[in-house]
Amino acid sequence: MSLGFVELMVLALAWAAMVAIPVLIVGAILFVVLRRSDRSTPGMLGPSPLGILRERLARGEISEQEFEEGKRLLGVR
Image 1 (cartoon, helix red, strand yellow):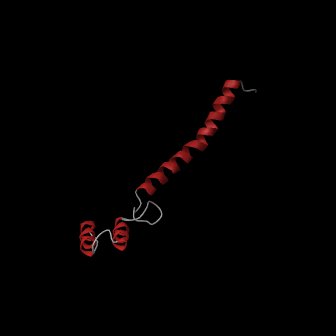
Image 2 (cartoon, one colour):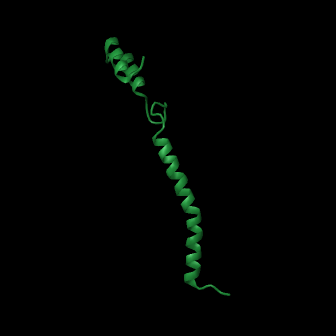
Image 3 (cartoon, one colour):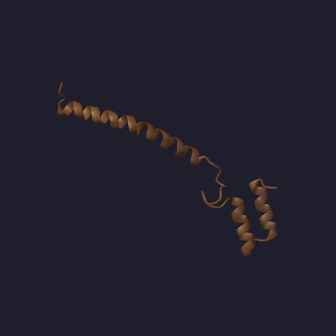
């Protein structure tokens, strides 16, 4: 039994789909999980809001009172 060109192309596309679909699903899941991860993870998505406040305090851009107010607004004790 010999397969024609069209049948071979359909077979090739079916095999490609069997590989591509699971890869796309896993990729989409990883994308969603990483996007929803804690944004305070250093190096992953930039500095945390508290880290930015600490840096600004260290550079003298804000006073201790402004730092404490920022922590309060962020809900950090």
